[in-house]
Length: 131
Image 1 (cartoon, rainbow, N blue to C red):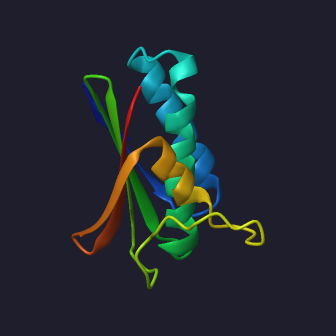
Image 2: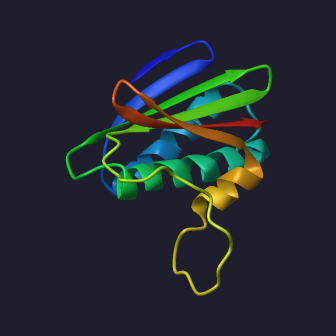
């Protein structure tokens, strides 16, 4: 784990347990930054969705995922980098009650401004929200 004033990062193994580890990391980071507990829920939800997508769609077992967070002026930026092994660009799907999954990025889109790009051969999905 690395960290400095307003910024923190952690590298996680791409496995389902990474979601809980990412949430715990962000919760600690926000607590240390003095963010009220009631203001953390949306950030934790966004992080869960981005890390879940990185594990399920952008990685293979044994790959690594990097979570970067920065907090400045009440704006939180969350970045998740994966191995970019998925064959498609992430998109927020329209609601469909018949689909068992696929609502995550739609929730992220509702809560935050998000974008996707390739950085050094890895996919980075970033989300920004106000706390």
